[in-house]
Length: 240
Image (cartoon, rainbow, N blue to C red; front, side, top):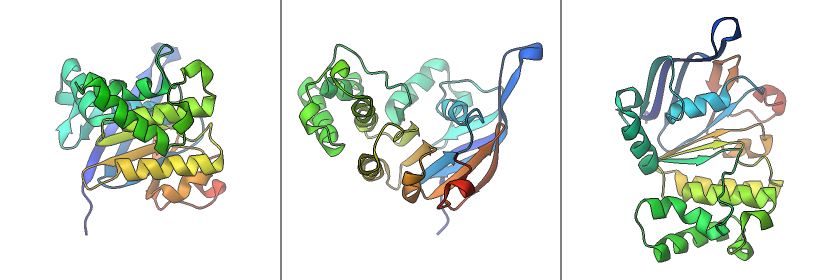
């Protein structure tokens, strides 16, 4: 059965700086992510992986090319429309957890639902369910300062899943987690984020989670150099 692209990136370029200080971060990227899959993106530090995630989600403008999500062109949207689109369709897990320091773990995870207008009771119930799934049953009322880095990361993952996003984008989601917890988190993300109308894009160096991926895109120097089956060793993945 032919797969349908949920995300389409065509000839995308992005640079930073001017003149001799100009850096080409993305150099004509072509990439698709299909409905119902986990697409892994791997490559050395500085090759453009995080920049690509930010362009795909509209957090960064691109200089040239086209980006479409779920049949809608980001290029045709106003900044306000892009913000509304992200709120309704995209969940984020970035390396900076961005937890609100005065909110508990459950309250932080509930924020996307409160923004969408759910009652506090409903939002907290959904957030607590997700926190239990990622192994934080005993940390629901803890403030971020009372959580370890790995626990904060799991709160950020629960928050990203709370509103049932159609696209979940993750930048090193298991970097601060041990192997068993990382696998537990990936199982939760696969179960919650993948269906016939959703997809998941994960930037990772963590070969332990490669078995969860359906395909891998390898990046080098601002380009996608290959897309295919997920390798089973670090050398093949270029993930070192």
